[in-house]
Structure formats: structure tokens, C-alpha cells
Amino acid sequence: MATAYKFRVSFEDYDEVSRDIEIRSNQTFLDLHRCIQQAIAFDGSKAASFFISNDYWIKGQEISSQPKTDKEGKDTILMESGRLCDFIADPHQKIYYVSDETANWSFFIELIKIIPQAEASKEYPICVKSHGDAPKQYAVTAAPKLVIAEEDAFAKLLQDVEGEVVPEDEPEEESIMGDTEDGVELDELEGMGEEGEEEERGEDGESDGAEEGQEYGSGEEDRDDY
Image 1 (cartoon, rainbow, N blue to C red):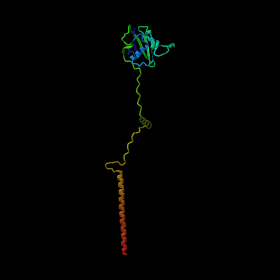
Image 2: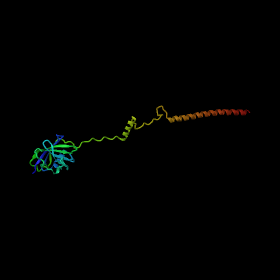
Image 3: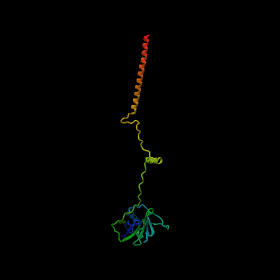
Image 4: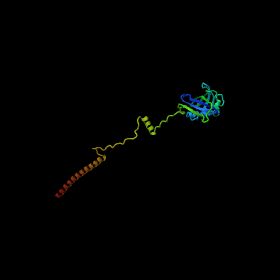
């Protein structure tokens, strides 16, 4: 039966956040990588690397998730082919772990216990202790600002150019001769004017006729005398 390792994994920038993980010694770094990502609620989609370190966390041999070459031009060991027991040389072995080089999530991994015999009923690797809430893997972005409606933008443009806002609705013009308590409608005034003219013409016609009749009558009397 294989032995088991108990590692304490903590964020380099958040030392109050840690996870204790147990894993069989004959399992791979890829198994450890996946367990760490799950324990801190990361999606595991980013490239990552383990660095075998000394007591001062100085990076040594690299074990990576993707094929790459080291500074000396040599191919690094892939996580899927690197067994943990082949790299543990110290009962307090330290491993520096980097996930997503762009975001630079860095972790300290320290071997805190060697379990002589792994439990047959336990499914390894497993997170056996969790302390503190892990930070979010991705930064939360602010919601975009609402776009101003076209008519509002146009009104603002007019205000900037003319120095005043154009009113949306023009008030309807009131009638020159509005209804008042003592007022009279314009059409009534026009009707009254027409009636007055007719009356004047009637009176003038009658008076002229009477005068003409008187003159004709006086002529007939003169003819009888002859």
C-alpha cells in the first residue's frame, strides 16, 4: 500500500487563505494541480507550473502543465508524467506553484505530514481542511453606462449650440377675441356691422323716395291749373 502526503497550500499574497490536501505518493503533479484548482474554486483552464524549491522558496526544477523548455533549453517535465514520490527529498519539502502566468496567481506548498499508509476507503487527492475564502479568479468588471437616447442627445446639442433648450411642444395660440363674460365673438360683431349698414341704406332710400314723390306731386297740381 502506497504512502500519502499531506500538503498545505496557501496563497502567496493571501496568507490567511489555505487548503490542506492529502494525496497518494504515487499520484502525479497533474492530480495535485486539479485538486488545488477545485479547492480554491478556480476553473483550471490556465497553464500552471510547479517548481521544486529549497527552504527559501528558491525555484528549482519545473514541472509544467504544457510542453515548454527551461532556461537551459531543456524540455520541462509534464505534470501528467511526474510522480510526486520522485521529487520529494525532504520531509518538509517546499514547492512553489504558479497558476496563470498572466494573472500571476502564486502559491506556497509545503509537505506537513507523511502518512505511512493511505486509506483504502478514501478517494485521493482530497481537500481535508479549508481556511479562509479564496479570492475570485477573475476580476469583476463594472456594468457599462446606459447610452443616452438620440433625441436627448440632439436636444443637448441644441442647448450647447444655442445656449437654450428648445421646448418640445409649442403652446397653442389663443383667439384674439376670446370668450369672456362681457365679450362678444368676432363673427357676431361682423353680423352686427352688416345689419347696421342695411338699416342705414333702408332709411336713406325711404327718405329719398318721399322727397321725390313730393316733387312729382307738386308738378301734377301745376298741370291741372293749365
